[in-house]
Length: 270
Image (tube, rainbow, N blue to C red):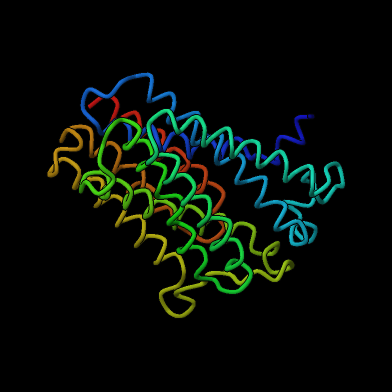
């Protein structure tokens, strides 16, 4: 498989999901280091498999978009059947790795994957609200990491962290959608365009960024992060608010990519 064919698995996005799982794992006091690597690897491999199946389902749309028309399926380098086999192999491997932590982590992984492929992917063609709905699946990797370390999935601490990752995803992928708006229109995908009137869409991006920063600043009150560390993490979305302008989507999107690794690092060092 060539480097171009690796686009089928979107390794950077898969790694971000794995890092989100590490953040959840880090919340559990005295958790084993071995299960931390299980969380990173298992969730990343599972996300890579989900990406492959997503591209199989959306191969007709990918042909219309400049950003995606060079992927293996639109180029004809891989058949849908082969891509499905590769995706299912990754999913099976990811679930098997997560099973090292008992039945709950792979079950949560399967739920996240099913939500992504069976709910978000078809809704993406029908409604602009799919962006927020799909963020639910991206909020589950921290919960998977938490349960791998022995935490209960209903604990308020992991629910709070999962909520923070939900808040992060909405402006993150919304900015990505705005950056490639012409592609989405060519493919007939509805664009999420709130605030089209007097306030403008940038106001709503700032609102989500402010909510993300405020949620991070709440972490010390719940004992999830030290009071000295939280302001540094909250500074990531806060510093982006003043520079949130039209035509700045690429820069803002890249900067927001730093949030999950910084959150995971801060929780590991707390």
